Image: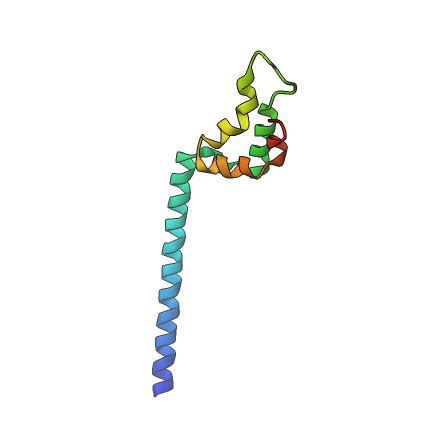
Length: 96
């Protein structure tokens, strides 16, 4: 009897776990949707963002427009996500 009762409890617990996993997935999807609206760049692959940042760099030094030298620093100040991307891009820092 006890074994059957415990089997029933295990079955109920597994069902509850499945329900909670489904609820968790719904919350994660909702969070992703909100984050995507708040920061659309997060939907882009990191490699594409890095390519865009690299293409923003001047191809040669322009002495009349010195702020282009500070582009990596400017990119790091947009948001934390951009900071993390630019921080890990040695090719962008070598242009300063």
